[in-house]
Length: 256
Length: 256
Image (cartoon, rainbow over all chains, first blue to last red; front, top):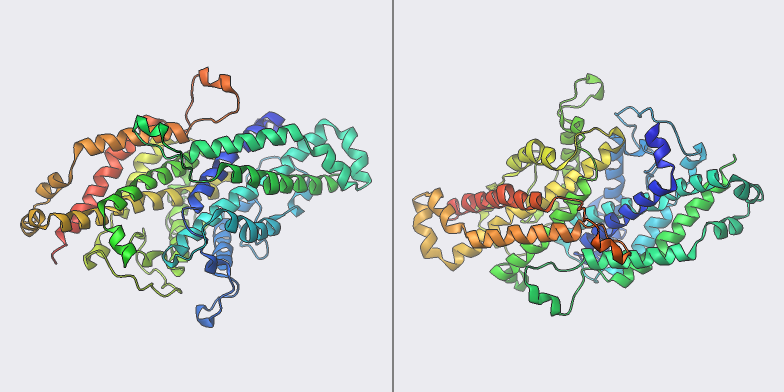
């Protein structure tokens, strides 16, 4: 119970979101070691592979099924990308009190995340090439990164819940009027967003540097493993807008 | 062909080993966000789970089977933890020339790595607790980290091959005499090992710091996400000795 109350303070939510930035940047750096490997995400042209959908789609779906058996999707922080026909968990659900409104389960923007990831993010961050020998490792980096992005974005449910509880009187009329635009405006704090963009760029510089023991290397031109300005853009154009979309979707169902 | 020759220069091998340090430290930081979760690695006491072996064992084995289908183990850099009954790859093997001696395939110390990991490393790095809700995410961090450790340690095959080619006259008599101790001595460079230990500690400090935008935070006591001295120890006591074990095992079979 105390850990649930704890989870509901805006401070602990903020701490978790900040920590998740590190996870996303680590996973991003690891993914872009490999080139785009676009064959992974394409419908196979030859029927010899004997799979439906892309290689990545198959692998991701089967990975989720495996993780579902170990209870991944019992956690309110986790949202599946392929929610249909997931096998049941062999671990019983823990008896924690639910802090989110039951409608939270129906808020899932993973289809959008996956689409943006394959069509926009990968081409932006990766060099164009195919390295067949690294398809499997590339795909497992993708899965880790997508799951980290999804967790971060769907954390918007917790953000929305705590904001709703803190200012119910402000949110209630907008929810009843189904006024998405006004809700979005109420949830937007430009100064905070600017700070996030600066912080993630700084993290990209810190985590993406080449660490050596030579002191005189510090005078050399620094080459980062990931472009810090692109990490800012990732937050600005995709992560933060999608998080707010989750918040609005959640709030619209909050009084159901 | 050029990339194969490239792989065989000691410089490119060293670059890869250095880059793999970052991967290992990122994955280590991510794993130890979670507590030990020892239930994952234990034989289940209740038969209700209906699995043989530990939950982690099952999940890891099924993950490898999945990745094998996408060709993970066609790469000479990848070695399975559960090599028996792996499904065939649906991707055909690429036609790269083989740079390692065919005996390389029989060198696999993953059983040792897994044993050390569960019995020694996890208790050293993790806080003692069970968080049932995070079993699935913990296990997927474990798998990423174990695969990174395994790749790094089995890279010893490439190190040994290039050393053998560069100084065949020195190695040949020791191999013929099956003199493991002399081979181990010939492969050991204490000054290099000291440098690696220092570098990985510096990386742990860099990647494990809390990055904030506040400038005055630099005067505060720094708290790292992973203890840099433990990362040094990880290399000193486990990664480097196991790599040299791989090198010796490979060399002993090099003239077969």
